[in-house]
Amino acid sequence: MTARTTESTDQSTGQTTGQAGQAGGKPDGWQPKMVALDIDGTLLAWVEGSGQVYETIRPEVYDAVHRARAAGAHIVLASGRSPHGMTRIADLLDLPLEGSPQDPTPGAKKGADDRLWIVASNGAVIFRYPPMEVVREETFDAAPAVAAVLEHHPNALVAVEERGIGGYRVNMVFPDGELSGEQLVTDVDEIIGEPVSRVIVRDPDATAEDFIDLAARLGLHGTDYVVGWTAWMDLSPVGISKASGLQQVCDELGITAADVLAIGDGRNDIEMLAWAGRGVAMGQAVEEVRAAADAGTETVYDNGAAVEIDRWFPST
Image (cartoon, rainbow, N blue to C red; front, side):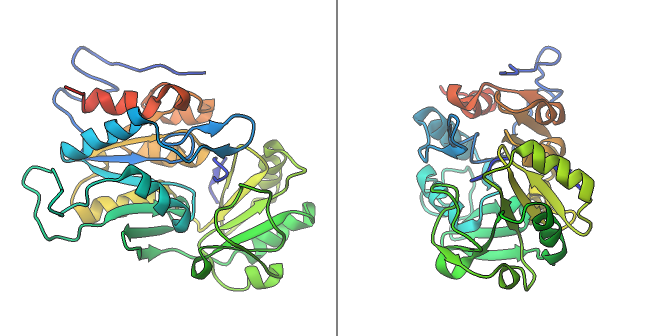
């Protein structure tokens, strides 16, 4: 079991600079070949106090991402969201498709598979888009872990992705705005009656600290977990994280973790930030996230992702 304690829809640290000509220990001339971006709290700003985000990308962030893509970097979204909750964010970025006639990458091979790589469900699902094609999905038996949590929180809400309806199967309807897509009310035994890639457990009457303490006491053997900003717990297969998903994408692209710039703000970003050649924590991230990163940037409200990307792909 690995404990990762993030966004539910899931302070500024400032920039860290090393010796002259270096940033966060990177050598002169280093430039990311991949930019891996969390969504909620990194690309999208939180609606303060609500646990939800504004589903708009600020112009500064949009432009920075496009500069990185135009310079040849692969842009990969990596989130705790289910796939259907990520495709519309990919659409907001309006990126030229890799290998398409609009692809600005120097020397790009036209006519290649032009779809984006996206890492969803905290690394359990990897897919290409558009259109969506799941390349890899890791599943596990969540029944024992869910039963253990419900023994202590019997009124908790439980959800799993239901790709066929672009939403979730739930034991009870979640509060407005917390899940994207349709919610199909289903008996909890049926929800977890077969292997799944991720389970969400949510108790609106509890706190994040309650869930952190409970998970530590229970152990939750056979699963990994992430506790979010609220009493929201994502259960996932052991050993699966954004880092493991991104590593597979790197293998497909023929690059290494050392070539990756990763930016995130949540506890489910910890492995990703530690794994990447340069991991950067958003300014609003909690201390344990900042501790895993090589550097920090400004908050999401101050366009921290754009500030960091501009370091490597400056505007002219």
